[in-house]
Amino acid sequence: MTAHPVRETAAETAYAKINLALHVRRRMPDGYHDLETLFAFCADGDELTAAPADDLSLTIVGPFGEGLSAGPDNLVLRAAESLRAAAGTAAGAAIRLDKRLPVASGIGGGSADAAAALRLLVRLWDVAVADETLHGIAATLGADVPACMVSQTCRGEGRGDRLDLLDARALTGMPLLLVNPRVAVPTGPVFQRWDQIDRGPLASGDPLAAALNGRNDLEPPARALQPAIACVVEALSAMPGLRLARMSGSGATCFALFADAAARDAADAAIAAAHPHWWRLATRLL
Image (cartoon, rainbow, N blue to C red; front, side, top):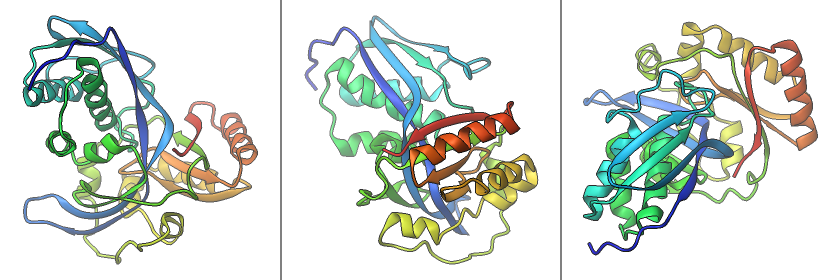
C-alpha cells in the first residue's frame, strides 16, 4: 500500500471490557471453549499515546505498569508489528502505555491495549487497512481483541471472536462501578476448573434483559481460586439502586450496574469505606 505522511502524535483509550454475561457451552477439540457472551465497554481504561519514530518502542507507566514486559512479547508491540506488515509500511512509533487497569483482571487488559494500539497506529501512520484485515490481525492476538477493536456492545460466540453488534441504546451511559480485590486471576486455571456442565444458551434480543437472565459460568471456578471474588459480588449486591452485579470475564474484577449515578457514587463511597484496599473505578457504559 502507498504510505501517507504520518501525524505528529496520536492518542487512544483502551476501553475496559466487561462481560455482562458469559455462558460456556462446551470444550472444543482444539482445547478452546465454545462461548456465548455479551461484551460491553466502559468509558474509561488504559491510555495509549504514540509519536513517529524510526523504530517501534514501548514505554509502560501507570499504577499497574510495574513488572510488565515492554519487549516484543507485549501485545501492543505484536499488534504494531502485525499492522506494519499488513499496511506495507516501514514507519515506526514510540508508544507510551499508561496502565490504569489491573492486570489479569477480566476487563480486557492486554486485549484492549492491543486493540487500541491498532486503532492508534492506523491514524498515526495514516494507512488504509480494510476492516476485515484489522479483524484478522486482532483475532491472531487473542480471543477478546476483535471485540475490543470494536469497543461497542456486541454478542460474541465461538472463542468470543464471532461478533454481532447489538442495539444497546438502553445501556448507553448506564452508571457502572468496577471493583477488584487486588488479586490476579490467570484465565487458564479458571477455564480448567469449569465443571463442563452446559447450563443452556444465552438469550437473544435486548442485551440488558439477556444479561439479567444470564450468568457467568466462570464465576464459580474463579471464586474457588480466589474467595475474595465472592466478597466483592456480595458487597455490590447489597447496594441500593443496583440493576446487576456479577464477575467479569475470568475475574477477579466484578461490576455493578446502577439505576442512576447517585446510587453508583454512594456504592463507590460505601465500598471505599468498608474495603479501602480494593481497587475501584466509577464509570459508565459506552
